[in-house]
Length: 293
Image (cartoon, rainbow, N blue to C red; front, top):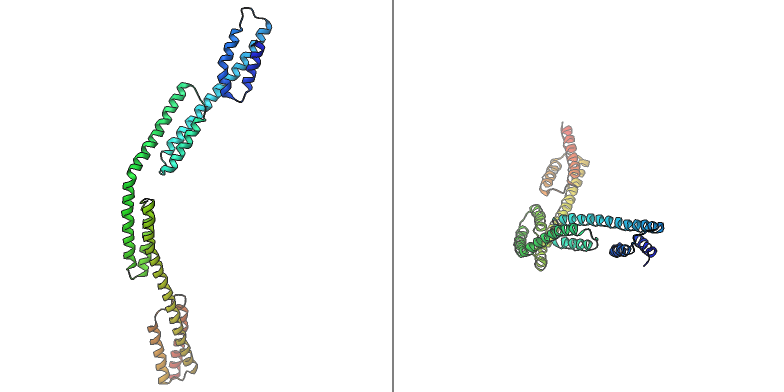
């Protein structure tokens, strides 16, 4: 190959996007050039040599830049690998390490000394992850067994809560129990499903009892409100007559006694009903005192 051809080849490699191929071919290209050297050089030989070595320098500069880039990339991978050691989800962490390994393979090469040192550091982090995961898996059976015990205890507590009389107490305790369930951890895929179904039976029983209680309470409030409205109607009739006979006065007193025995009509109704009834009663007895002098 002539010097002109070697210069053209060097130019092609310097402009190539395939850096790995350029780096691979460079030593042989330089060897061929040295084989073309002669003791006597013409001006043309000097110009060709300047061109050739300019292209060689360009290739080496790209090589140095690639080495530096590869080193930076691999240092970044190592830092991300160290961060992944803090991930508590080992499946997620495993995926991260797989991605980092693939990234490492495509990160390019630096000098052998740098590459070996970086690989040793990266391998140490990976080995730490594998050791952590192995220890976790070996301990997982014990973790699942403990979680199973906790969930079985929570199921028993749910049954005890459902046996209570106070809906208010049951509601507070069942809410706290649900939070404890969320914190109890996994008992293993198969056990978790069965335990949840058993726990959920108790939760559904609680909600059914709570809904029935409030439905009943709402009905009671409605009935009590209706009874008090009837009392108000009777009191209003007496007020309209205002004859102030013994029978009428006794009737008003009896209405007051009946009001007390009916019970609360719920906060949506009770205050308005009481204000209306009390106003009628106060007006009636004030009028009575004025009438009787």
